[in-house]
Image (cartoon, rainbow, N blue to C red; front, side):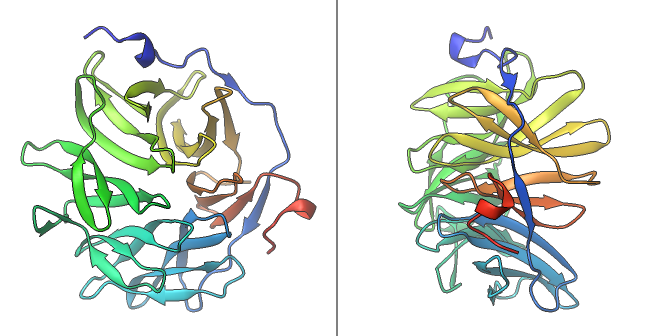
Length: 288
């Protein structure tokens, strides 16, 4: 299939000039062996997960460590993905994808009355709409829209694709994700805006497998790309069409998993979890 103009790869996009960013370490929950951060809302409340000797648990709260924790009944793991400005979270467990209230009450996401076990519930917006993906009977991964705690419909990119993984959804209804496009047979990051699809590949030799994991209301996308044996966190400004690598000192693996309206983000790395503050430390709204 010949790509339309809206599908042209962003090989002409540029790398943004360096600006002052600050990475603020996230305080681990009490008793944590490892900690990961995922969502962040406009009140700088974060959601994440941590491991201890009893399994993996969910937590949420301010980055200073005043967290609330919760588990999914009968599950050995609990992993939140995002948190909206009402404190509602999405996530997944080995008992199924879920939506959790601002108090941590879990409701499983269902499709045709059955739990979505072979998939995930990803970014949720302030209207309670979210996106995710599941494995269908055809063996392909399908991106979907959800609302409340119910599957609504598959995501239609309007072009011929194989598997679709939807990760990010903002309050404008823009969707970002990762899909196999049949015009070249390769996987590409994508941005879906009002039925128009734009493909996003991180520029530069040796860079590949760019996955967008979140999008804010300004159209700023955060995610991860690969170069050699390293993965790097990145942001992509879909208005200015500029990319930026977010560097974590001495890390071999890093990703941006959440972004709020003010471009504060959550960063996971093999050097620990961080809050990305888009200004110098003295001006950050979050402190360590």
